[in-house]
Image (cartoon, rainbow, N blue to C red; front, side, top):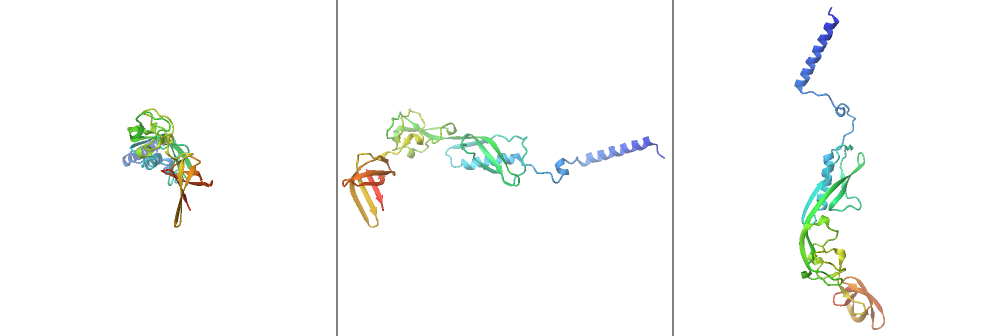
Amino acid sequence: MKHPLHAVGAARQALAALALMAGCLGWTAPTQAQSDPNSPQRQDLHVVQQSAQEFLKSQTSGLPGSVTISVDPVDQRLTLAACVEPQAFMPNGARLWGRTTVGIKCVAPSPWTVYLRANVQVVADYLVAAVPLVQGQTISASDITRVRGDMSSLPSGVITDESQAVGRVAGMSLRAGTPLRMDAIRNQRVVQQGQSVRVVSNGPGFQISTEARALTNATEGQMAQARTAAGQVVSGIAKAGGILEINY
């Protein structure tokens, strides 16, 4: 009969041999997720960040100039359930360029929503006043010039196409170098209150024209009212040349 101390020593030698064999075979202890088949799968956070990147890329594809997108890294401490199809969206009030926020949400199997910070830089040409503009002044091609810069640092509605400005009227006085915005200019009036206008009525197989006096101001395409010589008040679409068009 072996002495108990001899048995303990033999057992220790056997365990050491097993450990050596395990090291040679590359065996490692199973993790909790590997050992438990019912453990929930975790969402790949890189996929979440990539979803935001691709979403902003698609949303800014129609913008002029050069677009650079950077999405802040997702906090690696975040634990989310695996999502079949993460969906990106713009939160209410978020801008498409500049410093902005993108939302990523999961509907199934476990709903969750996270928000990522991002920066969208848009370098493009835009229009500025080449000379001081006075309120009410009709803008000509020589009154504006094109410059290039980061539009994400500018107010929204900055004009990038000359056709949006030439022939329109400055709605306010602007200093030279001021970016032109859509809310700072308006269409030129084609009908002035008190002006003599021609009312043209069109219908199936007929056209009637009569003279009238404008009762309201209107830009092209707006509705305007006029009073005919007979005292009748009519409404029509203002057209260039002092014309009110009525279609039946």
